[in-house]
Length: 292
Length: 140
Image 1 (spheres, one colour):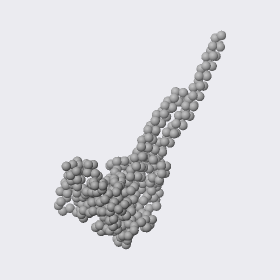
Image 2 (cartoon, each protein chain N blue to C red):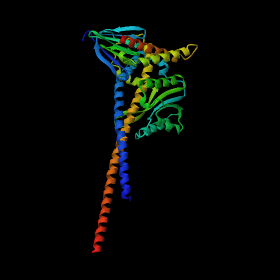
Image 3 (tube, each protein chain N blue to C red):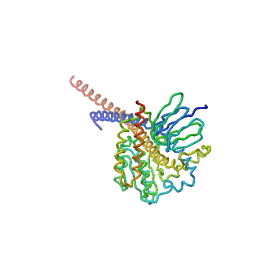
Image 4 (cartoon, each protein chain N blue to C red):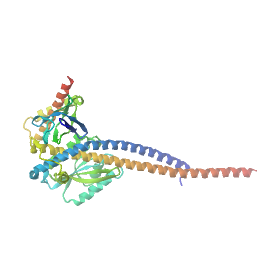
């Protein structure tokens, strides 16, 4: 059993840790709100771009098959962009991501190259036999704005058109709710699956063929890169939102646990103190008795 | 409402503008273009340039960095990477961007295969000049 002295020290140190975790929880809450706002603000843009792609794709129909970004690349290998966090202390956020990555890799037969965003993933993969082609360390994940995300999108696209890869994927934590973040692998290139599926729901929307200025080809050429850029941007935003939701949750749990621990320790401490006081009193009374 | 068209300017960061106006002028890829109420459905690609929205006797100017415009059912939606009021344009940054793009273009001038980079430098120069131009005009 610990001495009274030791107990007192432990109570203080648990209290200190509690203060830190509570501060981190509050920071995470504010940042979470910021990224959520950003995600909400970017939604109309994404919807508009996606809608345009779908409508134009429907108009171009068969022609689409011949476009390089719409059919599988010549390469044997696959490329994957992994989005993790730069910092730890966010619960199982990163380990869940890595678990999904490992099981996904186990199912694939081809060789896979990786682009990595986020220090945690880099540390994890660097120590294992992942073939990291590029680690996008600058700027940090949080500082990424649309322009930077667009750059990443362009890099992925040019790797794909370079002919080394058959398919490109993105792995990130999709934000489903405040307490649910699902690591997801989404096919990025060739464009196909995703855009096509959503297209079915929207088919009723366009009434009559709109005029196209200057022509469908040109518009499409400008539109497709934008579409890919927005998809990267959204993946990054969602990953960030998930990270902060996860961190907030983890820090809240830590604060609660620290509270519980303090309560228990204080209970033990008080009992001990009582005991020693009783003992002291008995000694004094006993001593006084003996003197009579 | 007749004689009115809803203009929405959408960027990844925010919906910059959402209001009714009586006419809109903007730069399409191959020249200036105007949209009046009752315009037929249309999709067009935009170049970097000025967008002018006329309504209630006053006109508002914006810089649009390129993107798309879609007319459908009395609404003109402009989807762009960036859209700024002339007063918000960061002239210094635009100047730097123009300088950067110019040097890049100069270096690449002779026999270079990287047309992609060249195109991007050209595009960014055009954006920067347009920004400067617009910002300068507002001030005077």
